[in-house]
Every structure is written in structure tokens, then in C-alpha cells.
Length: 312
Ligand SMILES: Nc1nc2c(ncn2[C@@H]2O[C@H](COP(=O)(O)OP(=O)(O)OP(=O)(O)O)[C@@H](O)[C@H]2O)c(=O)[nH]1
Image (cartoon, rainbow, N blue to C red; front, side, top):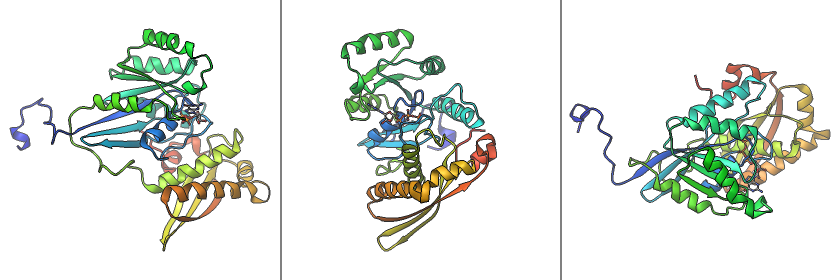
């Protein structure tokens, strides 16, 4: 059938009985969105760390099972008080991610409801999408009796099509979430080949591994002003040679990243290489540099140059 034969307003026919849909993962910083995405997809594709605001990209993870394909969209943490332009861009990206999806996973922490969760709830009130509530970190809950009253409270606040308490970190009760999401997929052709887990190039995943190492080792010392670019990727025999630049905003941050006698950057490099060899299933030669690019967080062009999605 060509376009002219198709009556206006007719939804597309399901193709070969397959189903496919987009699901956004939203929630305030640090609730465990990246950890959940990684667990769902089974490989590390988004930086997960103890620090807030580590996610800057709209990352898609894929789960394909037989006729069903779920396209997961990770969103940056919502931070209403983000002082700089980068924070605003992150919030806008999160809002934009709510449109054009078939369902939204709202991640909260068990028995912990902060002002930022409430801000997120307000945003979700009018999103008009089926909402699946994920109550994460149940492993941390000492008094399990508090879980049901907490869920009841949230049910009074928003309408959920499904509520799934789980632990993304321990992988507890994640399967019922996948099943609930799969059951809601609309008919349609698959958007990605079934053996793919993300549409982001491997270089991006490598940069995320390096950035995660940095965030883990540096604690609060270098705030989210760090960014990583993979500048060289060369495969020689069974070894991958990777050169990457760690961008910071100021000279004093560079000194912190390099560390005394280069100790910090060496430790970051070793930790990252270890993870990358597991990820790429090959030997990795990794060289890291630190460079200063001043105040890039304050300028939209700079943010785009760093490869971060900026919606027009
Ligand atoms: N105990 C426990 N910790 C968890 C669980 N899920 C995530 N965490 C931890 O919570 C912290 C934040 O996790 P992330 O996955 O980076 O959180 P996020 O929501 O993606 O954070 P942003 O990128 O800042 O929005 C990390 O230290 C995780 O290890 C869980 O189920 N149980």
C-alpha cells in the first residue's frame, strides 16, 4: 500500500506481530536510574556513581525478547536549583524525554521523598503517559513495614499503572518490571537490530567508564565540570589503543585530576582499563590527558561541542 491508499488517521498495521515502544526513566538525581538501566540492559552503558547529576545524555538501552523490543531512555537528574546553564539544559532534556514515549518509569527511593521528588511528581501530573512507579533501594530499608504505607502515600499523589518495589543494585525484583513494561508495548516494527543494546557508539561508552572512575575517586572535589572525549581509537591485533582527554574548567581542577606525581590519573587509568577490557573483551592500552577548557558549562555552544544533547 502506498501513502495515497492509506486513509487519513489510520494507525500503522502491526508488522509481523512485533511490538516496540519507548520508555523514559525519570527521577531526581541519585535515585538509581543509571544503575537500573545498566541492570535492565545487562551491560554498563550509562555512568552510575554516588554523585548526583552524572547522566548528561539521553541514552537508549535496548531489551529485545522475541517479538518485543523496549527502547529505554535514560534522563538526566532533575535539579531545580542547578545554578548553571548546564543544569538548565539537563532539566530541559528530562522534560523533553517525557514526550514521545509510550510509558514513563518514575524512580524513587524507598521511604525517602524529597522536595526534588515532589518537583518531579508535578512534572509527571500532566504528562499523560502510563506511569510505572519503581520504588528502588528496598535493600536499604531496615523496617520493611514502612514500604506499603510509603507506596499508599504515593498512590494518593499520582496515578500509577503499576508499582514495582525493587533493588537495582542487587538485581532484586527487576524481572516483574520488564514484564510489566513489555505488556504495555504498542504494535510496531523493531527500531534497532536485536543484538544491539544501545545506539550510542562504543567511544561514548568508553568515555562514560572513564568519567565514572573519575567521579568515584574524586568525590566532591571536581563537580560535574569534568567531561571525557575519546580522541583516538585504533585496533592493532587484539589490542585496542585508546587516547582520551579529560576536560576540566580550571587549572586547580586539573591539578586534582592529575594528583600528586600523577597518582590520581594513573589510578583512574588503571581502573578504567580494567573495566574496558571486560567491556570490550580485548586488551586495552589506555592513555589519558587532562586539559582545561574554561567555563564551558556556561555556554551552549561549548556544551554542544562536548557532545551533550541540547534540544533546540
Ligand atoms: N543500596 C542501593 N544502592 C543503590 C541502588 N540503586 C542505586 N544505588 C546507588 O545509588 C547511587 C546513585 O545511583 P545512580 O544510578 O548513579 O543514580 P541516578 O539516578 O542515575 O543519578 P543521576 O545520574 O545523578 O541522575 C549509586 O551509588 C548506586 O550504587 C539500590 O537498589 N540499592
